[in-house]
Length: 75
Image (cartoon, rainbow, N blue to C red):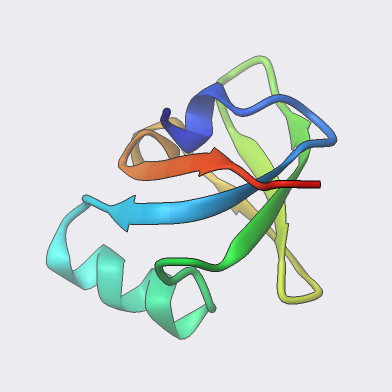
């Protein structure tokens, strides 16, 4: 599933990042790598997804969030 489809309050593991190379490098610098857990904190009406990764809150636009494939983390 895509991160843009994530449910508020659930934790997901990043499986793959499929966006432009420069954006991929920026996301990696921010800590969004394969196998890293991300918590969906909020979803805005315009499609923006607010996540918490490694203690930092990030807002990702719809295009970027749609390019991040995730799976549900085991609780």
